[in-house]
Amino acid sequence: MQYDLSLMERAEEDGGVYSIGAVAKMLGLPAQTLRSWEERYNQIVPARSAGGQRLYSRDQVDQLRFIQGELDRGMQPADAHRLLGERNRFPVEPRAGADDLATILLAERDPFSAELSEYLLRTEGYATRIVLDANTARQLLEEDPPSLVVVDLLISGGTGQALCRLAHEQASVPVIAVSAIDSQDQALEWGADAFLLKPLDSLQFISTVRDLLGTSAYLRHSVRAQ
Figure 1 (cartoon, rainbow, N blue to C red):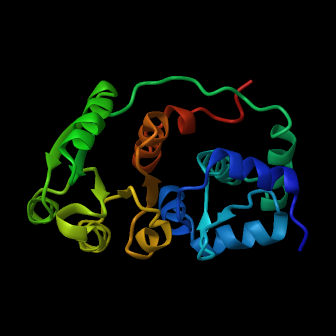
Figure 2 (figure 1 turned 120 degrees about the horizontal axis):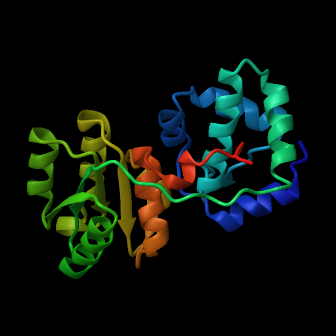
């Protein structure tokens, strides 16, 4: 199969962070459908991690939402992908918008990093809770699940793996795994929906939170806007 190099380069520049499972949940589509579209139409080709896992960028999630919207209007998949290809020639700038209030649990090992993340989230209107040990984070996930959890994989001596699994399998909340060590493949295997390398880029961090909560102004803005 020969992929469109311009699309692949675009995906690499935008930065793939979302696993195929996370994208499937965001869109309410089977992961197999995403794989089928990739192979059949070559329009939305995610990057691959070092371990070979698909990693979708924010831009690609937005494009998939466009496809989904056209299918809901009765368009056939081939026609929707063809239309997307035409629209990609004329990108549309995103529009700002208000986000719905959500509670974010920050399970961090570093108080300074926690405070910075809290500041960024509160500036965007999110409610936050900071915990600096895995046991407290586990208790909150079980008793009062947040809207989303940010897990430092090195919390409490490296017990972030268990927190990712708990949030994913029992609490059923989106998980952003963060670490100063590149642990992308492991994080995705443990149930994280996205992985961000520390130190966090503030814009990427907030955008990832918004995307996983489905409140992103970037994603709410339709590619169909004129």
